[in-house]
Amino acid sequence: MANPFPDTLRTYIRAGYPILYVVTSEEDRAIELVGRAISEGEPRRKLHIWSVSRGLCTTDFKVVDRKTADPKRVLPFLLELNEPGLFILEDFHSFLDERTPVGALAIRQLRDLVGPFKATRKTVVLLSPVLKIPPELEKDITVLDLEMPDEEELAAVLGDTVEQMKDNPRVDLNLEGDAREKIVKALSGLTRAEAENALAKVIVTNSRIDPEDVDLLLTEKEQIIRKSGTLEYYAAPERFGSVGGLDALKSWLRVRGRAFSEAARLFGLPNPRGLLLVGVPGCGKSLTAKAVAAEWKMPLLNSTSAKCSVAWWDSRKRTCVAP
Image (tube, rainbow, N blue to C red; front, side):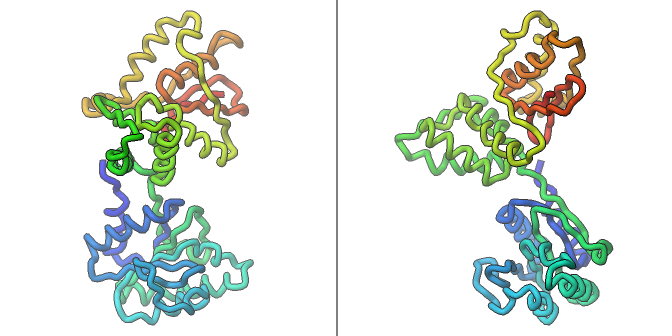
């Protein structure tokens, strides 16, 4: 399914929304999608990008005015421009805190833009990995979340990597059958940059791109989990052979695991939504959760705060979670 972000953004821009707030850590991807949205729907608008390190720049990073690197000057500069445009302000949220020297002024300047921008076909896009909106601006700002790359985008990342490596005799490319699908699914839940890094690590480590390297790709998710500080990544070497009994459950899990394939999606079969394991201590609940993660090639997340044994499937980040 195509990313809905450009269409949603285009709708807000055409409707005259003056201030949009895009929450994402993927600046380059967000700028690319914003550029696509205005080129397809509002081609007369010029795209500019601002940061405190460069000031206001064109899309090829030519500085429009060096004085605009001062956050106190950029908003009045945009107000005085006599042409429609879309202006991306990177990490401007840090200047919207009243405790900072420019906080109160920046908040007032943004509020002053609302009316004039509606009349002159201008839009400000605040681009930041965190959402911080002062109360004074809550009614004037519209928030958009940039979703993680979908499988189509990740397949494009894989395709670009393969294209770069196809003439390298030292890199073995094994992408026959459902190999591409397995690799793309292993990358699900990563940003585009993280997916590129994960594939590069596989190439450097094993001199190949092969579905057998899925476990190595999953270690990139370990980094994400460790940085979050809320869950613990658990390496799961166990397989169903380590679980005694529970034959009916293991059989069902093996069959249900096929629901993650592209063929199952095209058929209309939904992804597994969750699995609740309940029983006395020592009956194999946690061991089964570890075996499921290994069988399905999913990273296992450990939550030590849980009071009961629960394993569930996070379809957005493609992870198994267990206590």
